[in-house]
Image (cartoon, rainbow, N blue to C red; front, side, top):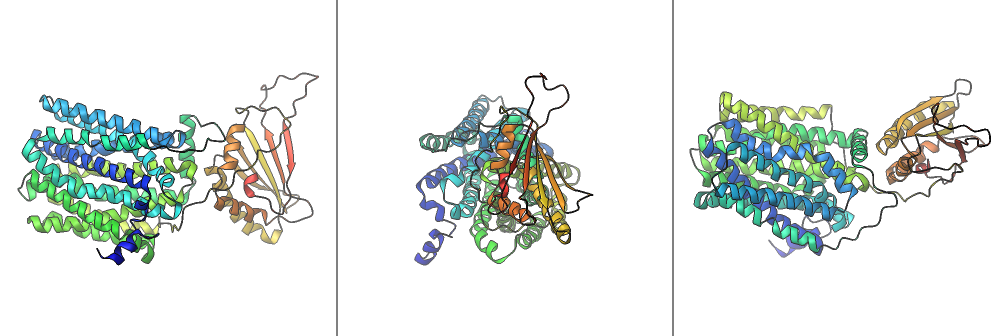
Length: 562
């Protein structure tokens, strides 16, 4: 690499720029070793399964066992990452993975491993990965400034794929010379550097203004945010489908080495390494691709090239040609996954980043887990090469999704808006008081009615993804200029959270809605505590003052204040 290219890589926009920050650099290097261990473990597990059974279905299930936990526990893992100290969550997750790797090593050394036991411990190791992932990815924004975040996300992908480049080759040598036991033990040892680095990280976190949500509510809140965020929904759907269509390469690679090429563990490791080399190459060009192509065009191109590479792998009986096709497949696979990841990272505000990234992990892991099972089953019925060809056909067809689910354009990280002061109340409330009903009255010129209604549909998504429910907009039939927005929050504490979850973009949207207000009177906001029949002990001398009314001036009001 020349001096000029080094300066470019480490410049503010370069892919290596985040490595200038010591904390990120230490965690990145330690995670590289941890990923290396996982790759070695994966080679050992896949090859051990080929030695225990000839079933393509069970060989593919190794990949399913490693990836399925990410789909199953993703949302709880994301909620935990958002609710608690991400450093401690990461350490606990790594400890779980270390325990699973250690037990697998011991049982393998004693000769007690069966296909079922192997899959069970792969599931445990995968569960540790599933719990660690959201906390690790969500903490990246605490390790680098905002302008370096896309490059940091890309570098984390590069870390995994550098390990994939060398780990499988190393794993193949380890398995060939010392057996699967050594591969499992190496994985256990390589957990330790990352555990040490996280232990030494003195994370500075700002105490939350409000108490954390309960687990079940945090999961519901995360699901609600994603369901009301069109851009994240589209990215997750495309990620899932891409994972299903393209997972045959990874799931069937041991069988490609054994059945199509007639080789052993060393060739299998080399093939995985070729895929990883391609992934590193692809990661280096993520920034350039984002600058020159729209997200949709880039994803379509990746899918088509991936399909060609998969067809070449299915038809090749020459190791060098297969390895070359895997380099291409790895490059475009990495490009697609990095673009999906960046799309989620930049579309989620900080308070729900862990849950959004967990949903992304669930999508890609679920796609790979489901696809691995499907393509393994197809390979059992029709053979490895036909299974790969069918998968390639699915990749060719996948760009048609862009006609219905077009990839969103993302520029920079969503900005959190300033916190708002709590509204004044005259009724004694507790955090659990509720449900709370909010009504906002707008007076809009009749000529602007249709445009105003269109803006309010966007306001609806904004309110609902931040915690509101039962949203509606109504127009007075006797006074057509009068519109009333109405929504609910479960409790007073939920309402306070909802007010302060708005991003800067949300506030600007609310300001657009308020700008339609006309007339001499200001916008009126009513916050009311619902009182279902029988919920209040009525006494003659203690009337229940259940409503509070606040009048807001039109000029300079933040839309988030409602």
